[in-house]
Amino acid sequence: MVATGLADQTLDVAVFSLSLMGLNYQDYLREAYRVLRHGGWLKVVEPATRWKDGNLEELLSAMTSCGFSIVGRPSCNDRFIYLDAIKS
Image (cartoon, rainbow, N blue to C red; front, side, top):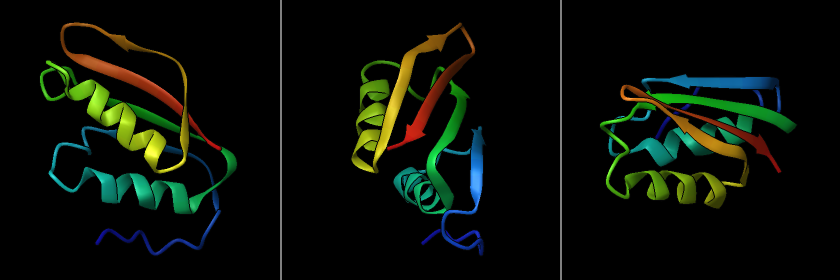
């Protein structure tokens, strides 16, 4: 279980940078959803190597399953993937 100690719906923006590399990354996504206000933004920057070969679709699916709407298309370069999502 992942808990920030923040009250529900207290943030306008949450940033994950190099923080979704563990097997329990969905717990982090659920916690971000809990602490973000309606319409709040989730910004994700993760290593491209972690989410290549179909794993990116897994991450996008997990984000939408947690209640986020993906905004735009993922931006990728040889090192990082950049994602924006909004709490629906």
